[in-house]
Image 1 (cartoon, rainbow, N blue to C red):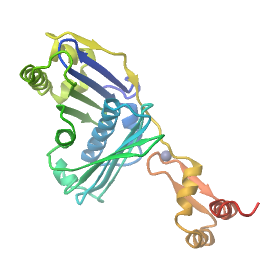
Image 2: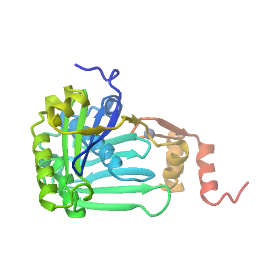
Image 3: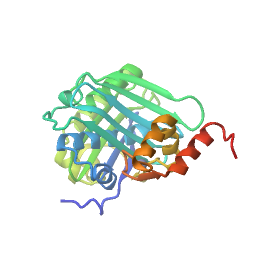
Image 4: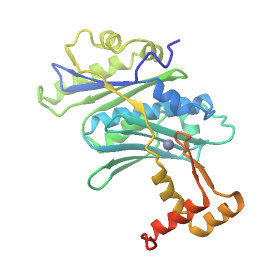
Length: 294
Ligand SMILES: [Zn+2]
């Protein structure tokens, strides 16, 4: 099968020259491999996390923003938390927290009674947040429902994942430009989305973007844009970890230091370990208290 190393992680946009519809194809190999490495996720959890990562990349391309887009589900099912994010620079990371031995395979079991929160955290201005309860039988259905509720434009998602990688396709109606008549718009949309539904998981995972587009839309004129690189990159840092530690309170940290001689904490996303010695822990609070002692 395809090695994670030879296929770059990319996102690629295309538009139909004669219809108000656009699309995007995302492929993840290395970033997916890095996100699951050392985590021992059972297959269904890993596949689902792969879909979330791809979805965050797809969504980050549909919206113009400067910052990060976060998809997060909390559920009563076997996966208590699923989270994936993609920055406007194409940097991905994600995580799942799941029951000791998940037995479920299905989306609805894994994320039972879940709520999906989509957050767009911009570097400037207020964050935007959209919430949808997970009613569908797949991530694709849930995202479609979210767009049905929040936008007037048709939006469909298609995902395929195995242990080697994830492929995802988005189709989205554009506002009326070339064709104003609703009947024409609707017939384009139905035609293109019906064709997309004929793609098998195997085709999505093994065919190149060009072959997928030829297979589906060879009768259409398409404009295909250059690929954009995606990469796993965690936004954790020593400084942020220190800030999170101070939230535990000085008493709690002092007792950890007394017991273990320091505080050791590793990032849940990327596994990077951060160690703080007794002196550093004391210093955290001097800074947190406004740097009163210098
Ligand atoms: Zn990290």
